Image (cartoon, rainbow, N blue to C red):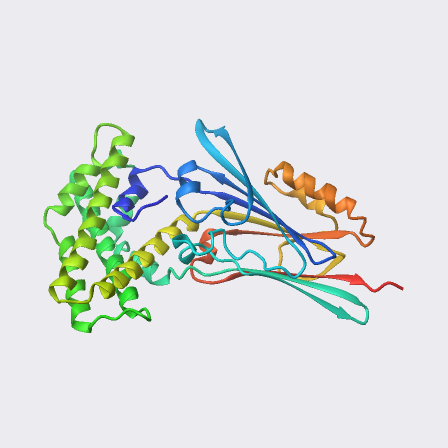
Length: 372
């Protein structure tokens, strides 16, 4: 999982990895839908970022591990079936949990329309935008300086003390700016009741944390850790945790001094933490890759998909992804369905950054002719 900021030093100092997501969706003639999801990547990224399919969220799950480039890789395979007219999954997060509010959402629907010439199956899933435009604008403004761009192109070992100090200053300013953005989001959220002057004092006091003259030197020291990568990771994480605690204490102390009702303080802190957490999840999602395949009854007549095949087996043969045994079992079940018009397939490839600020909708309509 990518922490914030200081963790941004992490963009230079810490190793990271992206997750590969493969989602197979099979629509059956009786309007039931089978889902198979395979997510592969670094165990920490997989288990500590966005919500993963789990037993608690209604999925059958199995995990396996493998070695890739001398690194452990975790593979989670999850399956689920929704019967005719049952609600479809819209997130991998368990219902009612804290993660549900910040997890990626993908509302899914199937509409079946009977016309004179036959049945039309309309399938749609929308991966909802994460709303990163404000943060990315802040990042681009702070990192647009040519000198900073040149520093970012260097390996950590090549940086001079002056370059590390300059980079640390920009990272701290970025962290301060996005923290102010999270505070602003919390204050503007319906249900949060703070007097405007009280909020602005909180904002000013939190900003003063980042103006600590010793802060850049502390960050540089963590980035220069000579005891190995693991020690550097720990030092950066310790700074992150300490900073988070200082911000929370400052919010609490400031509002108590203003005699704000404790319930209102708790509500403000809860919404602030959710905005911050949502951003962390969005950052984790931004470097992930999706492959989505949908199997439809009959012939696909309209879609915004990238690759259409007249059989599911052809799609699996042509794709680059490695599919789990559950997918092969699904093909067997499609054959056993003994559905005379057969099934066709369509697929999409996209990146996590594609859902940063816009919805990504996958749509497909298939046709099954009326019996003569």
